[in-house]
Image 1: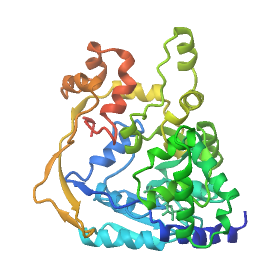
Image 2: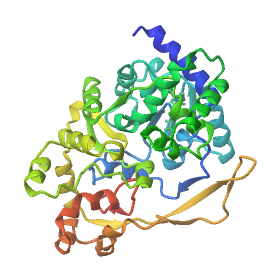
Image 3: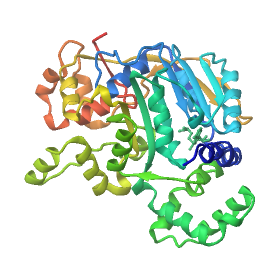
Length: 410
Ligand SMILES: C[S@@+](CC[C@H](N)C(=O)[O-])C[C@H]1O[C@@H](n2cnc3c(N)ncnc32)[C@H](O)[C@@H]1O
């Protein structure tokens, strides 16, 4: 792939597509916690660092391909950090800048720039890139830029399409191509063609069932999924191989809000047969998660992982469990500011702050949360619980998406 083709894709195809369909749509509310280290600690815990040394509150963060709001959400989430948001889409950045100005956010810089044009060298402690590189002709070319931008201990949060989440959508796109979609000039006419085709797909088949899940989605989200101008998708094995090819090692799954909503965030499959379970659990993470990917297919989690420089090595999931068990935890507690979207598209601050976390963890781990006392290690706490729950408990109690426990270490 020549540099010009890649560059042309960023300044041409992507800029034009996301001008018509800026992604994502505005969130109903934006939030910020009063504790600037809350989420740097949680990200550290996500990757098994219960000493909270991996990411400092004043971290340098790059949100690469930030779309309309991810850079703003990140700046609010990490108020002590400096955040750079870049995107190929000028319109998406304008929308982000308008909301950031309204909220008076000052730790955010937005820049119109393609990832393949970015020249950062060991500059960032945390790089976020979700739903981005798979829309490019040469995803590894983008990923190598991200690797180069990472400091030696940096954390990368990377999401690309899971092959098994895209099967029906790719078939639909192939059908559109045969129907002459590529010859239709304007994106609005393409949307109209695609929407009309979608309405004619019989509901009983795989494509029809998948379309039903998107029935009430606005044009931006619908177009991003069903009309994406170019896409690549990955199994765990392919994801891991690409990461390695780009100087990275996959660290841990990122539990994310989409999988949380679908209750499909665990990469471990409960295998009932003892002999098969022994085989499965004896596999290295890469192979085990690939087996999970193959068995769960469309109900496997999103292809969303933390990664680090290959030279750092990685904690296996089993080592991560041990680190969790060796840690003393205390329940988290913070106050949350909220800005709610009004009908004019403006965010208005809610007068009072509220307690955070504002939800309970899944029922199966609530008794474990109740038993945490800030004195005993999790191993001691687990004397009263089923050891088979350890991995589930660390995901459902002590991660960014389930931020109920913080390590008592500094
Ligand atoms: C599906 S949106 C995801 C936005 C955001 N990351 C999120 O998760 O909400 C994809 C965004 O990535 C941007 N993008 C894709 N490839 C890019 C590249 N090579 N350089 C810069 N931006 C890119 C697009 O312009 C678009 O705004």
